[in-house]
Length: 426
Image 1 (cartoon, rainbow, N blue to C red):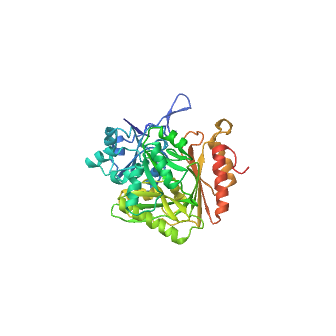
Image 2 (image 1 turned 180 degrees about the vertical axis):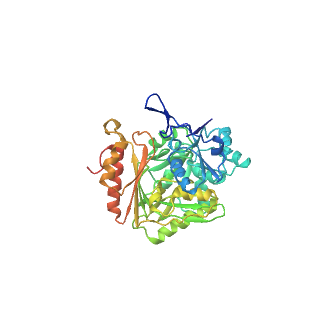
Image 3 (image 1 turned 90 degrees about the horizontal axis):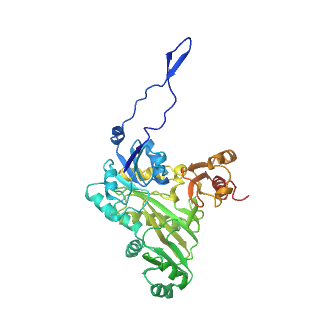
């Protein structure tokens, strides 16, 4: 495992003059004092360690700076998104308990930018006295979809009908109850549309069963739209709820977030916020909980849970009094939570994706800033330092105002141009 810091990066050009031959002077480099690893390891403020070096860790690090707290990242690679900007990065493998224990030794609390740390490792960390937030007992419900469905059903939370399946006969029996198509989901892993298959009939289901992963079958829900309720909970059970948002998805991947959800009935918004807060308490969550929801003619249904900063909350950086990233830090450190109110009547976030045809996308993404920033100075650009690949999330943009239609147009045009070199509606 490797400890990476920024102390060997080039500093500013400075120097001192020394008399040379004749009337000239020779400039010698000034000796710079190094900041020791020991000082980075022992700041006066508490240290939060985040497992995972993606863009969520990158933006959480940015939120830690004004709070004056220590922040460290366990990254898979030195060129992960967070590792490019955070000065205290450990490169290691979250599948290895030794790497996790070594990383946690320098942290006051351990948190995550993904849900993939093995449950037995979370239990071992807690058993050695490491403060893990959220804890393994709560994270289980974000890691295991069957455990989540079973527990939510026991709690009386409305969900799609479901059943564990292991054979074509199991799927056929479930389809006989709910009808085709049937949604098959990997019980563990999967995100952004991965690990989810919509099967129109037995042939497609048999193909998915052939992948050899534990599966869950769910009814295909004819929803009106997808919503998300984002809340935070601290160890002493203070809670805070952000306005419910609409998430615009294509092929299982979030494209836009509209905050607040346009036209959402006040009673449904209140129900969603209350549900998320009650779930956070019932599951013992510390930190953020994102509850992905289906709005249906018969009410709200819970789709998925995430216990970390979430794509549906990126708008909060500019669009709320307290960003989700600062809120997560406050919660895991058991600090009083920040105000979650909107900073504008309407906020729209659009993700930036790598172009489908990178060769035809034109100049480097950063060369496109001039067009976007000159064309719309109100667009806030967030790029993640990730190499573009077709369909890969490489950043997001946010705009705020009052007209959701106009804001969506501005956000999608800017995001499209940053990702492809073309405006979406050209």
